[in-house]
Amino acid sequence: MSRLVVVSYRLGGHDGVSIESAKWIAALRHLGHDVATCAGDGVADVVLPELAMHATSPLARRDLARVLDGADVVVVENVVSLPFNVAARDVLYEILDDRRAIFHHHDLPWQRPQWLNEPALQSRATWRHVTINDLSREELAERGVVATTIRNSFDCDPPLGRRVATRNALKVGEERLLVFPSRVIPRKNVEGAISLAESLDAVLWLLGDAEDGYDATLDGHVDAASIRVVRGLPPGFDIHDAYAACDLVVVASTWEGFGNPVLESVTHRRPLAVHPYPVLKEIRGFGFTFLDLDDVRGIEQFLTRPEENLFAHNAAIARENFNVADLPGQLSALLENLGVK
Picture 1 (spheres, rainbow, N blue to C red):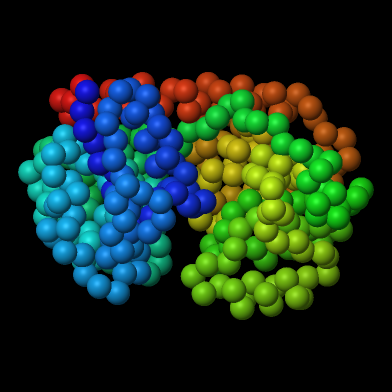
Picture 2: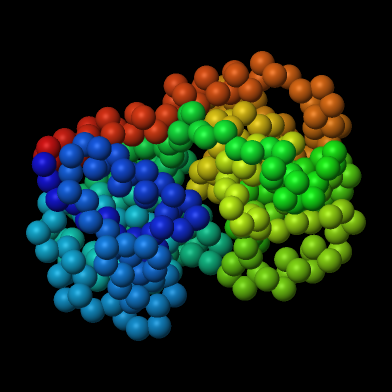
């Protein structure tokens, strides 16, 4: 089998890129490949701080070249997709100029307002580009880059969480509990989640921390809310407990490259209220049925009289189309296309 090195701004975190990278790494190792990791931040075999998103020092070519030496394929997780660290991006392009590489794009620069005028991504005959949705694949094609879509994948039989114990830890009795299962940054639209919780007279649970300098703004929204807002996972509890404990999952984002909580709500068989961000239309196209964030009356009716068959319907679609058990086969085909076995 082959030696692969996965390169990312950060690994081992709770962000979508880290989570999906971990699934790819596990699938590649399942196929028998030797997989090493390198990141600017987080948990990796090699940590190069100059590779981090907001590094203050430029990445030295020799340092990254040493890590990639001997790799049959380099898997690049979002480092060239979003230009958080242009110096690192350019070094990576230079080192991989004539080598086999897979660029796994979770986002693209022009999908963010601050990078609307970024140049198109580079491509070589020895490279393969992979997007997590068809929207990004089509946008790359418009710019002359051929890509393959491999959507994010999920455990369709996740562990059962502890509903009663988690609600007790949060001091939530018979109140309705809405979970906001993501970090808090502007595009996640926490205001929309607070508004829905107020309309339903529910407790809102924010699982993630504020990032990108959003702390003061979030504090202001929480202080102004007319409902109770709880923040963070209690010690000893995990994401599966959070899904088990809640009465409704809220994804209020205006933009997501994919939106993992959407499928996580499905696999955990929880009702979901979601804002119609662009890629959601693609996900809904598989036949899922979700509640709309602004349909307060419909949400109220569903929570009062849940349609249990809806959970089974959505779960069957997820198993057929988004099953992490299928990921090794998808990656095997991708590697074979690169001439790697």
